[in-house]
Length: 84
Image (cartoon, rainbow, N blue to C red; front, side, top):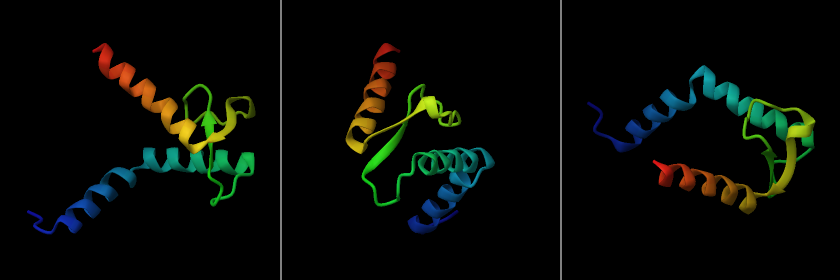
């Protein structure tokens, strides 16, 4: 049993984010940023119009502000939660 909370968090982080599926999703999100020419310091984000992070067609990508993007997905998540 792990007693140190930092070790526990690091272990869980590696366990989830280190899986092949999550690595592929992350690389696709980074690829979308490169396709749109956004730099790492840019406060805007790439929005996948259809919600599929693996679909990097130019017609599916658009640049929106970080606040708008987070708000958009927050609304969808609360709608799903309330419908159950």
